[in-house]
Amino acid sequence: KAGVTQTPRYLIKTRGQQVTLSCSPISGHRSVSWYQQTPGQGLQFLFEYFSETQRNKGNFPGRFSGRQFSNSRSEMNVSTLELGDSALYLCASSDWGDYGYTFGSGTRLTVV
Amino acid sequence: KQEVTQIPAALSVPEGENLVLNCSFTDSAIYNLQWFRQDPGKGLTSLLLIQSSQREQTSGRLNASLDKSSGRSTLYIAASQPGDSATYLCAGGRGSQGNLIFGKGTKLSVKP
Image (cartoon, rainbow over all chains, first blue to last red; front, side, top):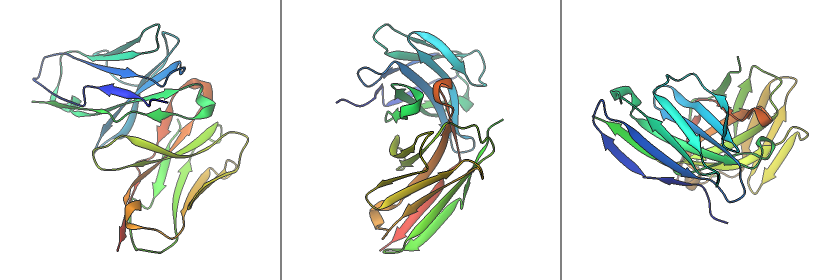
């Protein structure tokens, strides 16, 4: 069974640009959630999608957005990048929250 | 607001020692508790999931327990090995609410 696939693995962007990250969940999983990890703040929840609907949202500015497609693949978009957006972005896949979450390898975003 | 605290923040032990990592949470309404391992620059690897109806889970040399009434979980690692060196994260889940609340982690170093 394939795991959670995140692409790309690494990105370097310039301040002010926008970026799109992709996450393909485990086959059959309908929930995809996104997290930002930084050395100072640790892992922080961005949002969660379930069957194409945003079900839960963390405390991040509106520059951070996401969506989920009918095949459960999800994308996360960050507009008007700031230096502080440099982080490891992780996505997690779940069949249902009760059964735990499986994480991808992450996308390392560097904003210069 | 749910908060998760992990103690100690860092731990260095000689190979072969048994050790305990601690995790405490403020909201006893958490549904399940998941322990992860993270190697530097990598994603999260799920180690153990304690579901809402369970008190304990075991996998190989790892044993995790959950006491909701006291707001605590422990991860016990038996006969530690250098390959166990990593950051260990605990996370509380709210089931269908779709997100995990993470502690800041315990960085474990096992010396040969």
